[in-house]
Length: 121
Image (cartoon, rainbow, N blue to C red; front, top):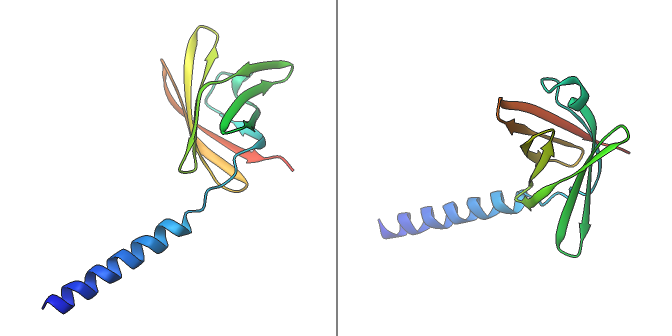
């Protein structure tokens, strides 16, 4: 019985290790074209520019000629999160990063809306 438990534990650890190693960290840097169709028209599309300086990531959102710098930028476990100040309030954005796309939410005082992005070539 002890041998069966031991083998089960070995198999469990091996499968957990392979699942963790399969989750490779994706590089979020670059320019991403985003869409948030439920946002007010003037904020519903634009670019998200992600750069890395030393160990820290920076984000800015570009809407035509207008740029908004982000605060509280965090990138962990392929999730990019940051805050942008829009008009009179803070919008919290959280996105899961994949190689060529991002998907997530933008939360503000009136609720949470979906946001997607595709990496520019």
